[in-house]
Image (cartoon, rainbow, N blue to C red; front, side, top):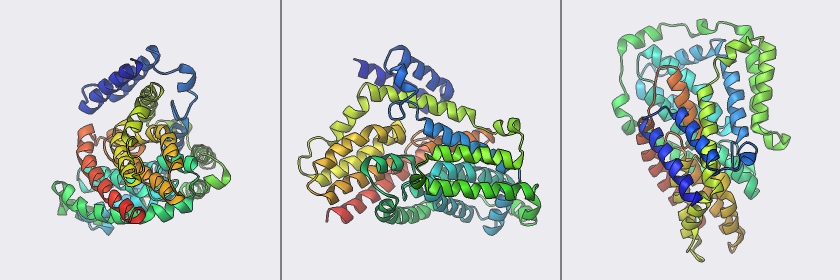
Length: 428
């Protein structure tokens, strides 16, 4: 009964989020309150369990990076990069989109996709404003690219960190097994965007001419502050890359970096805090509680168990179910709590595998499905929610369905390609 009740609350809330009949922050707050009042989530765990409640590591990672981005923004570097990108692309819409997607996909495996979006999205909005073109298609394309690119490494996508920890997989393991398919999928995705966003490629010669005449160096308002910011930022990037060696969670790295940047730049704390996407952080907290209701009542585990039952010794069929099941479920339940919940189920399947190679194939199928499923809907991954929040704050609102109608198509395409990869590499 409790499982049915939790699922009903989640489905109704998701309906209001998807149809935008009510403000999504209000919806998740009401839904999470219902989960607590109806005792579908234990209060002593929701606030203290990262696997079955609010994942504060994600919240503080976002918070720390929002502070860093808010400080860096004051130097004028985003305007500089926007003008530089527009001039390099000579204002050609598709060329500009490819350039921005390439930057995003290359940075995501190193910085993680959420951080990358927080840095690239403001640049995108500035350059689109300069060229007088809608920013929404470019932001959506970047998010899709970040979720694909982030799948390549252990730290590129939050679900990978969870899987790596549970399965004992290293940074090198992810590079060897995930990076090859990610490179191929991204290359095909770049070509596909030419068709997917074809109606959005508008070229305005008069606006391009005005941008080409700009001197990007003049956009830097405080060179000394920028140098200090970049010094701290290099330390933060190094911390992200070495967090497993340093035994520091990425959230700690982000918060330390935010504190250092505040100190070395002397930025006004009040001004910086106004740049924080508080609505996005609250939305995430409410969403985590909603999913926690499904976790505690056994809904997600039951769905996952159904998805992988009945395969006997057919491990290719099991890998297929994990890949497509994770892609579908991760698209609707947010892939971070989904992966945290399903990892023990996959671990049990791996333990029954006849050899280590087959067992690892199940982990890679699980990771690819969860990562690529993050493109499925507007709430499927952290990067999606962050980008939509930044867009709304800048006056370029992206609706749930505007994002999702592109995301679903890309998810189907990338998951199918991942299935071919898993079959060819591990089962032939």
